[in-house]
Image 1 (cartoon, rainbow over the protein chains, first blue to last red):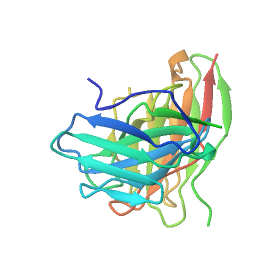
Image 2 (image 1 turned 90 degrees about the vertical axis):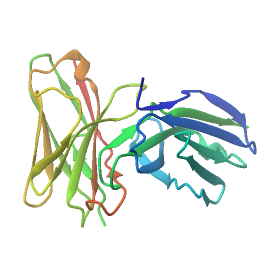
Image 3 (image 1 turned 30 degrees about the vertical axis):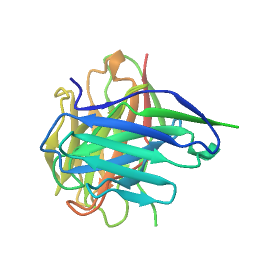
Length: 111
Length: 112
């Protein structure tokens, strides 16, 4: 079983739609959780950290369920520029420790 | 404020050769991590360097080695290259235990 599992997609949604990505992780000792965004042939960029209380950044909302070992990302009012691969990431200790990535979920927003 | 810089951008090698990739961390960062990203996969952790020592290592063979210099820059060395080593190699830097990791643009390595 992979340490971090994501649906690879692709998710094809029209502009303005709401889309949700889910991710599960296997190591219950994981302490830090993130969503990274990766554009085609570019480096991953931190989108947001994920907390148990849930956190929101503009159109993006992330949620962590430690009991179910489940992480989610919700994107509201999708823009063409949101088209990218979204990587679910967990770390076992501090934020600078080893990052374990899922395979990524590809999102394509269309007109 | 320069971010994480990696060189070279692209590299083509043949099987059996050796390669050295370089990384300069973001200003103020002292920890460097290396990742391998195969096509269609998420990045896989290779190892992390702090205070010129390897602190953590992923599931990679000894053909993969590294070094960190006193100025915090780092090198990744891969010996006896295999076709399966073709990938994007990403360097990430951070302040240990303090900040999220920031990635460089990567080095795209192709093995013929």
